[in-house]
Length: 195
Image 1 (cartoon, rainbow, N blue to C red):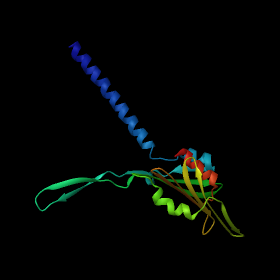
Image 2: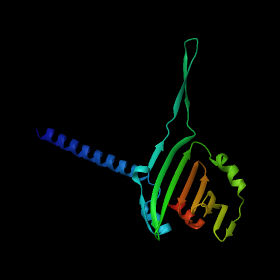
Image 3: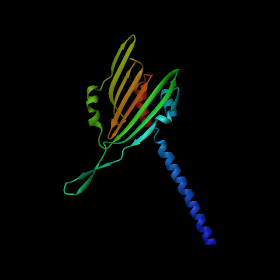
C-alpha cells in the first residue's frame, strides 16, 4: 500500500511539473508574438502605448508536399517548401503629446536570403541623406547600415505624417510603419534593437 501511495505521489508531482513546464513554454512562446512591448515603444517614442492583442499574431507556414500521380499507377510525394517560414504581425496604438499614432510591425522569416527581394529598392536609394522641405511639406529618405541590417528609412508629412522603415539581413525582413507621426531614423533603428 505504501509503495502504491509513493508511486501515486511521484506521478502526481510529475504531472504537476509537466503541466507547469508546458504552461511556461506556452506563455514564453506567446510572448514572442509581441515583437515590441508597449513599454519599449514608450521608451523609444515617449507617450503611452498599447498592443492591440486582437490584431497581433504570429503566422507559421508549414512545408507542404506535392504528390505526382503517374499514369502507370505509381505516386511520388516531394516536399514543396514555402518561401516564407513565419510572419509576426503586431499592431500598437499610441498617444504622443495628444497625437494618436498607429504602429504596425511585420517580421518575416524566409527560408533563404532575403536580399534578392529587397536589393532593387536599396539600390534606388543610395547611402546618403535626402531632405526636401517646403513651408507645408517634408520628405526625408535614407539608406544605411545598422547593426548588421540594411536599413531603408522614409518619412513624410504628405498627405499625413508617417514613417516607414524596412530592414533586412540574412533571412529576416522587418517592416515598421508609423501612421500619424514622423519619427527620426535613430528612433526607428532603436526599434530594431528590441525585435
